[in-house]
Length: 186
Image (cartoon, rainbow, N blue to C red):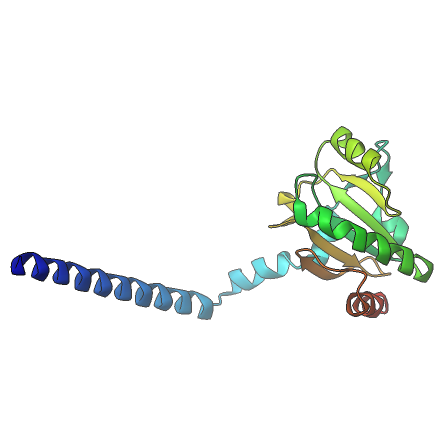
């Protein structure tokens, strides 16, 4: 019995040492990777700045007509990427609708873009009553470096992405409305 207890104690001790060593090494590697900065990495990061995404966004309305973001110069565009299967996306839509109604008189355009099939989007739209415009993104969310849905871009009056938000928000809250108004001034 004593021998079994010693083996068990040694096994637990070895596991703790192994875990501690693994965590320490992972921390060292993460620290080294975060301090590395080569010209190539900087150039790659600069190429992926959100403002560059504007050129890659291709939208069509639900009838298949091309929508050019250039057509909205002089207005602030709230572009929300969502999906029919995304619960947080659907949960924030009533707040987006409220914000759209409040800010539409202030030069804002609200678009909800999905890269899902147009027919799927149309079926969803037929079940809801929102004031903002639903569009189809011909550009995949993956090609836009969107890692999670919902993701929202705010495009200023000059056609540049000035804000990129991942996750659902209460877009109709006083704080978010004020943030959007500030972004419109950029």
